[in-house]
Image (cartoon, rainbow, N blue to C red):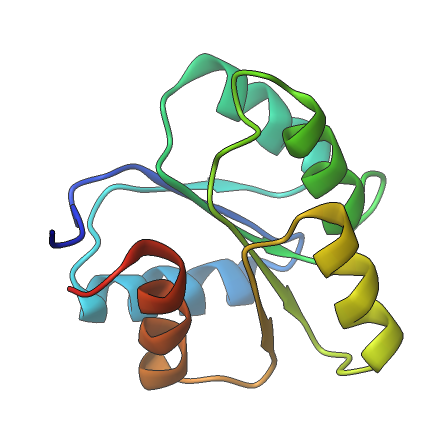
Length: 128
């Protein structure tokens, strides 16, 4: 089974430049249906209004962090199976453990390139 690159992907980051970078990397890989949210609460609203196949979220955001968003998604019966990739600038082991305990699908440390993103996507979604 190959990955449906037509699925809706939600990227969440409070830094506009990062949103643009992730969108461009996803486009290189073949994903065109990409929506953006600038914080966790906006993302949660969007996730409840539209059918997404994947969330890629930054960890450090205000007022709702990526970790809080992940916990909300995992606690929601409609969303709990949604693949969720966390992006962070910090590679601290305790952060990785905390994210895994909260149910993250995979974890990417900045900076990263299209190849790294594709590998993480394949580990979560399957082969392209």
